[in-house]
Image (cartoon, rainbow, N blue to C red; front, side, top):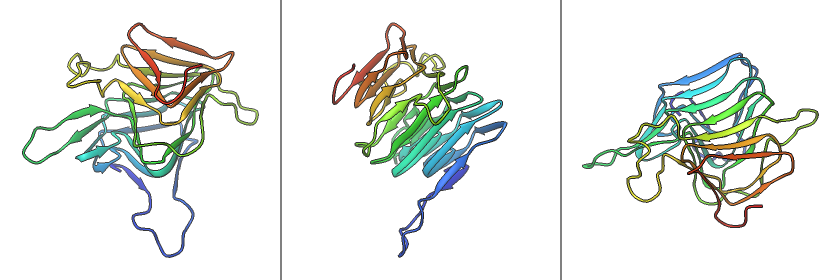
Length: 239
């Protein structure tokens, strides 16, 4: 992690509690222009719980560089978990990238907000009414997620979440919007978990693709898709 690393490097003889990074209760949080060699331009963590308040949380222009880099802004380790909750301000990912550094060849630079390691998963992705989580950079995942659905804007105790989760290509340059081979990695987010939109809005804008294991929309929620955007389910159905 370019700014923060919260993970075990080697398994100890006795298994300790899983390392968890918690960022909450702050008026404003920014991770800007951090770099990492390997994974997590700003944060590499086994488990991450992030909640916004006040002026919100911004990840901008962070970079992970390696032969096979993971997580332009955030990388979650294998079997890890991530919770993002815009409780009192927006959470924004913009301009975060991965950069390959192969020997004797040119670099490949892709937009990337979050990478989930093997068997890693989202435990929460939610925003309260009037707040949003903006993904101007996509989410990637390695292999299948561990068991457990992702329930977008799922209520918790007395708290309700009616805000917006937004995936958009509007901040990309014209060059970044052009595919180099096959699908454009700058525009495609992948969720290996089954996804259910419980409440609030899921918004797809400006050419993005969101691919899920399975997608379900519940009554009372809103799915907004611009022309040219795609919502897909690679394993099961969209209902």
